[in-house]
Image 1 (cartoon, rainbow, N blue to C red):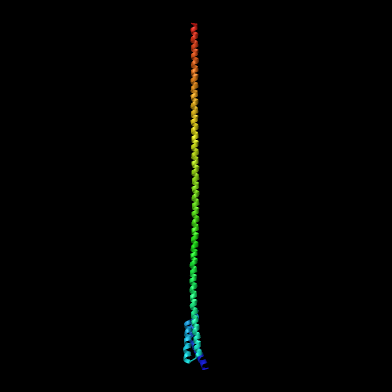
Image 2: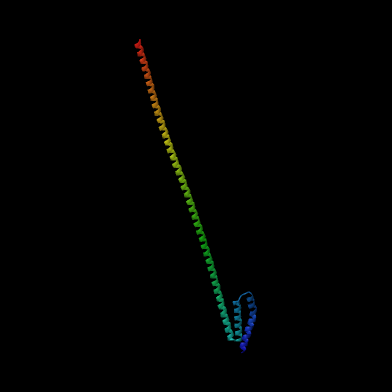
Amino acid sequence: MVRDLSRAAIGGYIKILRFPLDTALKVLGRESTIAVDRADAALRDVAGTALGDQELKQDARRRRTAADAREEAAELSAKAEQKAEQADQKLARRKEAARRQRTQATRRTEERRKRAEQDSTAKQRQAAKAERERKAAAQRTAAKAEEQIEDKAKRERLEQLERENAALGEREEALTAADEAQRLSTEAAKLKAARKSS
C-alpha cells in the first residue's frame, strides 16, 4: 500500500515536472520528445531503486524500451523520408532529362524538316533554273535554225535572181543579136537592091 502511494506520488511529481515541457511542445505542435521520455524513465528507475520498488523499475524499463523503439522508429522514418526525397529528386532529374531529350528530339526533327524544306526548295529552284536554261537553249537553237533557214532562203533567192538576171541578160543579148542580124539582113537587102538597080 505504501509503495502504491509512493509510486503514485512519484508519478504525479514526474508529471508535474513534465507538464511545462509537454505544454510547450504542444504549443509548438510537436509531440513529447524522446529525450523527455528517457528522462522520465530515468527518474522512475532512480526512484524505484531508492525505494526498492521493482514495479516502478519495471515501468522505467518499459518506458525506456518504448523510448528506444520510438527513437528507432523516428530514425527509420527519417531514413525512409530521406530515401523518398532522394527518390523524388532522382525522379525529378529523370523527368527533366526526359523533357530535355524530348525538347532536343523535337528541335532535331524541326531542324531536319527545315533542312528538307530548304533542300526541296533548292532542288525546285535548281529544276526551274535548268528548265529555263533548257527553254532558252531550245529558243536559241530554234532562232539559229530559223536564221539559217532564212539565210539559206535568201541565198537561194539571190541565186534565183542571179540566174534570172543572167537569163535576161542572155535573152537581151540574143534579142540584140537578132535585131542586129535583122538590121544587117535589111542593110544587105538594101545594098543588093541598090546594086541591081544600078
